[in-house]
Length: 411
Image 1: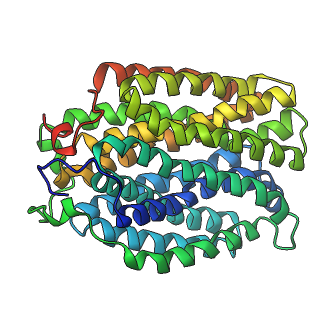
Image 2: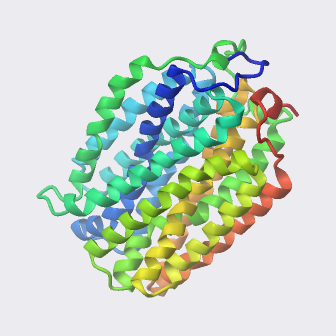
C-alpha cells in the first residue's frame, strides 16, 4: 500500500479486517451519542425545569463541539492518524462519564460539548483512516459499513434508554452505561497501526490554519462545505426533535416513542449499510441523488404525518437520511485531497464550515417552534435542504468511483 501506486484489489488482509471492525465499533458511539441527547431531552428539561426553547439551546451549544473538533482533526496531518484516534477515544470516554455527574444544565452542556469535540474528531479520523487503508473498489462499501455501525449505536441507544430512564439515576445512567464499551475499545486500540500513506508523507511540518486556502484545493473545500452545510440542516433536526414532537404533538408515550425509534433504526440500518455499496456500484453522484431524495421524503413525513404507524415508516427514511448521506460525503471529503491536506480539508469543509448548519439550525428551529408552539410545521420545512445538497453534488463534484486516492486528489 504505497502512495502513488495502485492498491491491490485482492481480499482484505487480516489487519484490514481487524481495522474494519475496530473503526466500526469506534463509530458505533457516534450514533449512540447522537440519539442519546434526543432521547433524554424531554426528561432533562423536566428534571431541570427548562422551557421548550432550551431544547434548541442545548442542541446548538453541544453541537458547537463539532466545529471545535476542527482543531483536533487537522492535527492528524501532523501527529498522525493513530495518535489522534487514540487521543479522541480517551477524551470522549472521560467527558461522557463526567456528564453523568453534571449538577446543572450549564455543566451538562459544557461536558457534552467537549465530549462532542472528541467524538467527532474520532469519527472524522476514522473516515480518513478508512479511505487510506482500504482498496479503491471497496472504499465506498467500507466507509458505508463503518458508518452503518453508527446506526447500530442508535438502535442500541433507542432500545436501552427507555429502560435506563426508569432507573434511580434517570438520564444520567445513559452516560454511565455508554462509557463501558469505550473502556474496552481503549485497550483494543493497542493493535492499531499508522496508515502507510501517512508514514510515506514527507511534509509533516507545522502549517498555518489557513494553509489550504493558499492552494488550488480551496475550491473543493468550498464546494464540499456547501454540501455538508445543507445536508446537516435536515439530518440534524429531523432526529434531534422527533421525540419532543411525537410526545408533545402526536400524544405518543415515552415507551411508544422508544419502540418507534428502535423499530425505525433497525429497519434503516440495512439501508445505511447498503448506501456505501451503492456508491461503489452506481457512483457517488448518482448515489447522492437517490439518498438525498429519500432523505427529503423522510424528513417531511416524520413531522407531517399523524398516524403512529405511518410516522414510524417515515422515521425509517428520516433516520436513513440522517446517516445515509454520510458515506457519500465521507468518501468525497477523503478522496478529493492529497495525503498532506486530507485531515485539514476534512476539518475545514466538514467541521469548521459545514457544521455551521448543524449547530445554528437547531437553535433557529427551537426558537421558531417556541413561537408557533410546535415542532412539526417547522422541521418539516427543512425537507427542501437535501434537494439543494443533491444539486450541489451533481453540479460541483466530480465522479470518483473506483479511482485511487492519488488519482481522485489530482486537480
